[in-house]
Image (tube, rainbow, N blue to C red; front, side, top):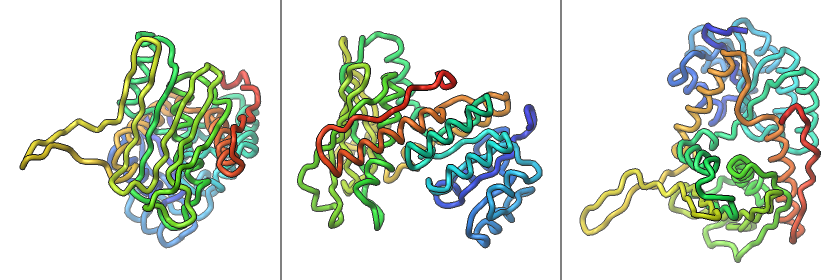
Length: 339
């Protein structure tokens, strides 16, 4: 594997997220290049590879990982395909940046953990990009400083303009609130122990059959209470906001007031319309950090344990949606390997 030279990356999956990573590595990230691309759509993947010098096209992830010039893997395929791709990467002992979810359920995530531990060293960084957002990073630093005292509560708002066709209530948890699950664990340094989901009368903006919005409550092993407003058909923009309430003060991020205009008797600014726009810088920082660490022979960032913990909390959240009441999170003891 290249340690000082340019890192050759195989990008698995060339949908919206994967194509954006291909662009990012080719145009933004330093010290890396796209060495191979993988997709079931042979015509699309060939078209992408033809536009990148020295890039090969594949429909089989294993073939891409064995291709000349491939030093690392970025997985951006649908979640159900992640386990097989991760295990294949382990066979080649390749470092991996895996977009969330690590895998779609806790049982398969545990299998990935066990396989990585057999290697004897970390290989996986999970793509929880909010950890690389500058506002969240400042909030984390403030909490670590102890200036505000112990965190007591964390309020989160997560709003999308609208959902695509086929979006389900379970996807509210697995595709959206999963980010608040990870950021709660990271900001507070706590594990989530129980989940409750409360549902108001659905918004008139929500498609028929979708319970939206919802209020999701977390309890943590550090004694904090966390709430998440998940509102994925708000109609006006994409917003992610967080406010932590501590013993000696509060701190809030996500107001989006970097630019405020005053004109024609009105004041205001713009609201991002999707997650790619809101977190573009965080994605750039995440991939650059992964490339830099990989070139040093290190693995940093969210671990496979973080991916497993999120999957376990998601399962409790989906049960809380369907069954009602408070559902405890079924989490195995954290292995020393991930401490």
